Image (cartoon, rainbow, N blue to C red; front, side, top):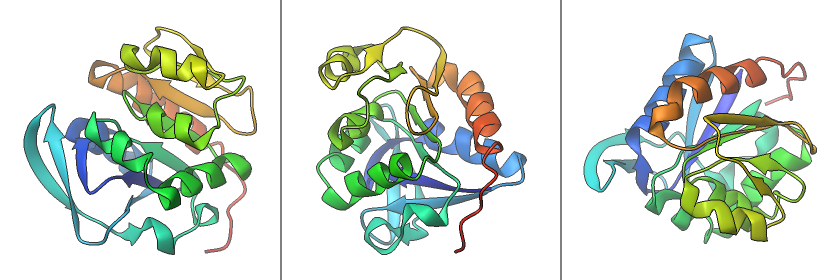
Length: 184
């Protein structure tokens, strides 16, 4: 199980990166940090700077076929930056086109809105994204975790850091279902 974690160079909510990362490791998987620039990414605890993490691959140099799933951590600034990066948006679209599971928490669905992959999907997020999701053709629900299989892939979403235990459990369960391993 090789899982891409897509984040912007700055602004990812640290716990929304580190908890799912650890869940993938604990399940025997290989998490890979993908960003729009090489080097290190700066995480945040809400609006306060937190730790930095080494980027493994740059989004323009990698394809979704090299992975079994995608995690989109939140944070306010992180998805806002990703949705303005053409290569990041295309990378996200590839996972949907290949039928690979995608997990997004908190503000991360902003990137999914930009990728235009929410039509007919039911998901949850930070409450302020509700109108954006509806305008993008999705149905928003206020639930701890939502697993939606009404589309080309499975979409796992959660609202906030308080939902991380349920989010991590759901994403690991869905990622381990992937039976087709693409050549790397």
